[in-house]
Length: 222
Image 1 (cartoon, helix red, strand yellow):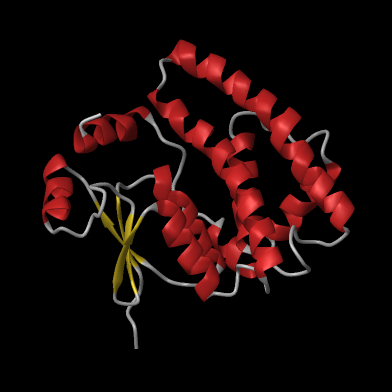
Image 2 (tube, helix red, strand yellow):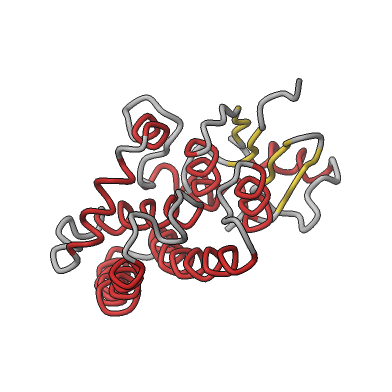
């Protein structure tokens, strides 16, 4: 029997958080090996498992996979969260790319000055409410089903919920003009595996604070 996936990253969100979300959504238990110091990272790099000298890295099914998108694609395909055919897979890829862009902007906020963070946050809210959320609202309206693709729960649903919750941390009423996304949020949040992951004490990570950012700068020499 294969062991639990083992995730190598710092003890925070960053590029690993979507991987934690997807594993949790699939009902997969996983272990985490946290990088606490620059020496931890250098030791991992010296093992020659980091193809591009960077994390995330996930040990799963006898492989050591790097690059966030490759890891997510593997997990989605393995656990039937990647659609039933090529058309559905392509739609999932499209929707995931959109949420990845939005979440990437939010992730980068932690490296801004307070002034820069306020300006960038306003821009992110504008993009979310004029570009990204209108698109997903339209998908749900035109599609007419409870999920984004086909009529089944997929990686696209998981990542859209993650993006919604991250954006709500910047502006709590950001979905006020998107009733279908409000309903989507409630619906997906109540899927048992997701509901469990959203409970206190899960492996979901909190928003980054100054202490975490300082640690990241030291570990990765940023």
